[in-house]
Length: 315
Image (cartoon, rainbow, N blue to C red):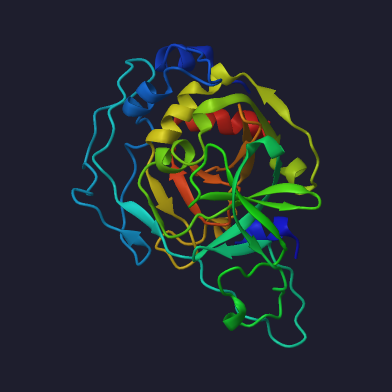
């Protein structure tokens, strides 16, 4: 099983839609000066949303969604958010168990620091992004290691660990090895309410300077068949993404494992001003997943804005 398998197992936007949804505005940071304002009022995707409760969801006060919401269309420019939704709590990563005797297995790279498990993103960064050294990990963990070996400092790859400039250390660190510095993320032990909690607060998607898409068939083959998209045309998409509720689509949740539905998929990437990339996986039901993590927590944003970007990425 490859890392790609682990992560999977574990037309242009119309001018009328863009013009009516929001007036495009560039910013020095790269994406949109009006993203925050759009996010505050973008709710095209939220009208049909229904909350749920499960063991993986932490209910927040006043979390019941409104039974109805004002009509929101590109024509009338009305984007009224739904009532506060339930936040999704992602529990700490369980420590892996050794496979049965004779079973072959591959592991995604990881290390444990400060009681948190960080997993590899397969994304390398410029050394200028490295902050202070926060520790070192020894390697030595493999598919056959027992649960008692997953302790502080344990890892599947040895190296020095550094903070990453501009990112929360509880979410992102970098492992420096002989081949460079690779990003490692920890998307567990946190609560996510809206897309902004992940894509803005932690990943800083608002600083994007470029975007491109890859069709799922090309992605499966590992081909770099990227097609660039004008950032201005993605302003309504990003604003809706930040305003959308986060939902649990993992195995055992009430929604079920999103990969069990065989939804059509597409892949959208945002390159940020610091050179890092935010990979998004789009599912045809309106879910958007951060593809740098195996966690099956998605922003739920069905509607015309999502559909146009999805169609563009699938073309």
